[in-house]
Image 1: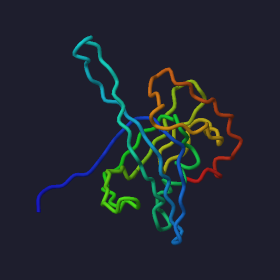
Image 2: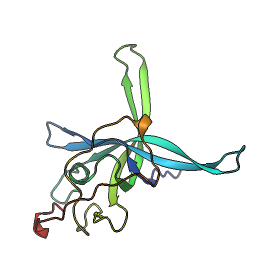
Image 3: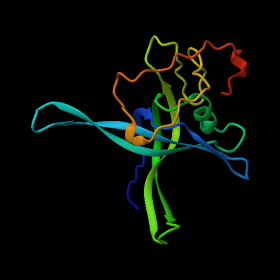
Image 4: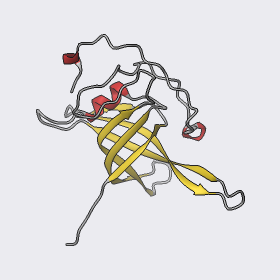
Length: 174
């Protein structure tokens, strides 16, 4: 059998708030939309343009005593519009369409590691799964939900200023 590599590293923004599902086994998954930009040169104008790519991501809590709690971190600290770095791998999802009965499929990103990024100077946090926090935690309220079609990944997108954290460090779940 030949060599095989399935690794994805992306920096982008969430296009929707994480949706949480808890399994009967006690496991948890946080599913969210993610957008990254591809740069391309417009042949007519000669200008560089950003072309968004929309992806579906799943972050799971691992099993065992020392398992990563990636789904918990995503649920607690990420919201639509937040900038994040994710590492993961590609997974092919297959299912039967309920209306047509045809088999459907799509590629998803399974998130193995996440780092929460916010612009410097806005009091936001930078976390990496398995590390201690730097700065204050992002707000727990979620912005109103919009579809991916209306997502604007431009740098002028406003960010929410989080309130300062009053939680002692030992209360942080990592």
